Length: 119
Length: 143
Image 1 (tube, rainbow over the protein chains, first blue to last red):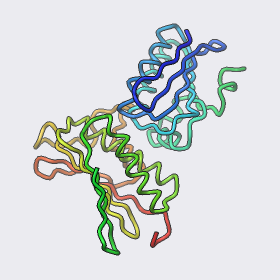
Image 2 (image 1 turned 180 degrees about the vertical axis):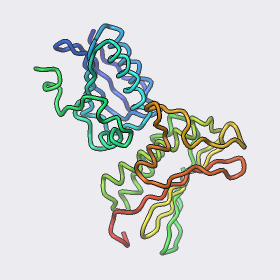
Image 3 (image 1 turned 90 degrees about the vertical axis):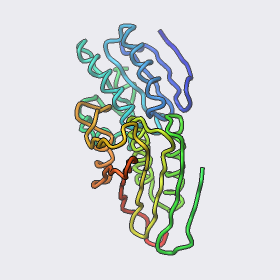
């Protein structure tokens, strides 16, 4: 079910289902303060039955390991169901965090949402 | 927030004291990124510093820091020395260098910091703990 909400400072989340994918567009900064919001939104998508998840990170200006931890947790849940999880258009600092953590190959990283969900 | 700069040519010191609360992590990031940009550092360096400060503040909060987190940046011609001092909830116990991971099975906040600037470490100063990070400057000398 589509949903849009703005909660704590610096994070805006918009969820929808598209072409069989659960899509979450994230806007703002993801850190220890805002990452619970990200977790809640992603778990809601998974709970609503989305087998594969695309996180649109085009407008994520900053993310630290708190956010990465949330993504890893959801990745595990999605993989347990045989689904896939894609990070769409992460900016260079986020890519660098993925590389440092050795998780850059754990996620599908794609440049565009349309390419990810096969539109 | 306290902003101080010394008249010394060789070294300038900037400091910020914030409550150890998750809402204030962004304040520390803004402070450090503004300073790095003021020093004409490139955007990659600025983003690296933001990540270091965010992980450092989060580490302090993970450790149950009470009282403020004291952030000091010493600027020299060649590097930025970041120190983040806090009072852990369990004074006297060693802050684990490789404590509970949030980002993955083996990844720690200090791992992330070291991935950006190797040699980062957490030291004890009596009941306080200090994260120390040396970030080599990328801007031309004299900036």
